[in-house]
Length: 289
Ligand code: C2E
Ligand code: MG
Ligand code: MG
Ligand code: MG
Image 1: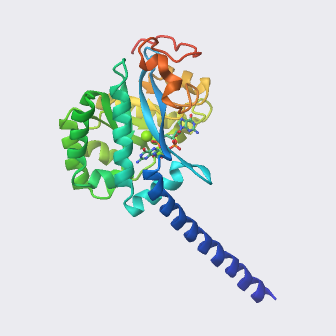
Image 2: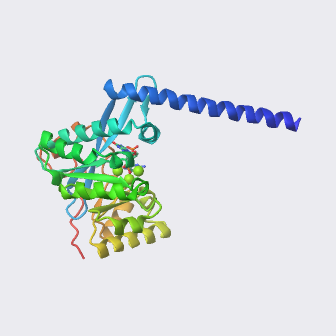
Image 3: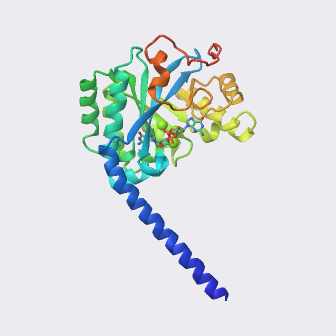
């Protein structure tokens, strides 16, 4: 009886695996058409300078509105895109759309774009971005690319060479999700990042979790020592923000300020008629220590 049960369980497991594999193939197939049939869009999340309380720029985040499934999260389709190579096309679409958007803003705000390892290792990546800046008229200094640590690890030398060329163009480079990868500290030494984005898992409840608080303080100390600005990701609560301001964190991003939205939600900021988010309690000025 136990044996039969075991076999049944295995069969259920096997068929679930089969279903997952089939589902992935379907998504992969659909993603190809998504690229050409306008199912992708970008939402933008403000990044706030904690010294002034002003919006300094926006991070572009890709969205896929699937005709039958509705919203498919990036955590589902980005890995599929990376494994199939579709990320090259998708990444170019994201970069082109974000740069075109930002070039049209009245206020010269920063635009941060996530770049995958696969893109970073593509031989034509730097040339593509360089050409795009010319085409869109976006100043290189207004573009920041966000790299995750895992993106660096796969082929360190090629990644570093491309990143150096990117920096030579005047584009800024941020290390995304800091603290969650494998070799954060050696990566920091290997490449001159312009800033560090501390992963949201450390920011969550930083005000009442001693471990998180110690880690965030240590990263802020590291930033100070290396002269690297720190942005805290995923700030959801006022208590978290207050902690970060007390500890002199440079910048923050998260639902407390705003969820990622269609750019029309930030019309007054991008037109330069407001420097802070509408309906937002203005963050009090904080003098640097
Ligand atoms: P990420 O670059 O670290 O982006 C931050 C993620 O945290 C976003 O999720 C954002 O919506 C979410 N987030 C922001 N503030 C908060 C908060 O206060 N609380 C919580 N719980 N979440 C918050 P999203 O948009 O689902 O993107 C997930 C990841 O997918 C991104 O992480 C990034 O690694 C990747 N991704 C998104 N767009 C792109 C893209 O255009 N290209 C590439 N290569 N990757 C992308
Ligand atoms: Mg990011
Ligand atoms: Mg992140
Ligand atoms: Mg992430």
